[in-house]
Amino acid sequence: MARPVAEEEEEKPLDPAAENVRRKLVRFMMINLGILFLAVMVVIAALVYKMNRLPGTASAPVADLQVPAGVALSGDIVLPVGAKVISQSLSGNRLSIDAELADGSRAIFLYDIAERRVIGQFPIRNK
Image (cartoon, rainbow, N blue to C red; front, side, top):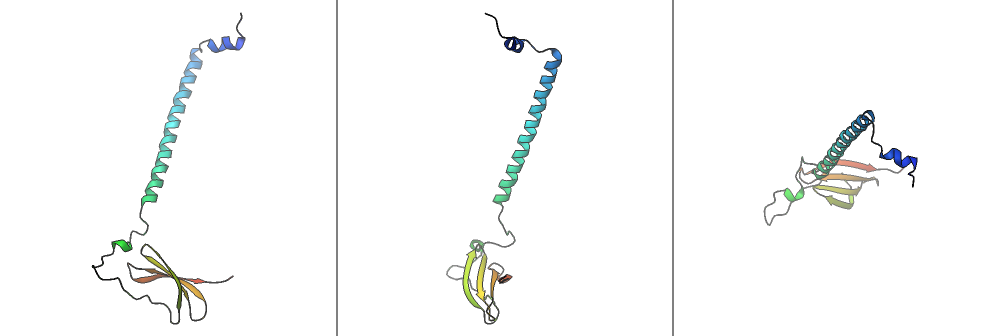
């Protein structure tokens, strides 16, 4: 039984020039895959580093504030005269206060518990 022509061509060894080109391509491919793998590892490491960093490292979280046993934290939060607190929200050492001002408009005040001061005021406006 005779073999097809395509099978005979596949079994023949490559000539030395073609074998050299094949070896160079394989080496080129391995080097590029290594560089690509290294680049992906650097990106993943950067993402993990960024995710594990604590935001706002300048001030301590509420849990790290030194409060003597049996004593509660206290302080004044100064809002404009006539302001009425609508709601509040606590996140870490930041307190967000939604307030209705004397003129009927609303604003959000951002208070830092560790620094004990208002660090931002954001008026709420209708378009």
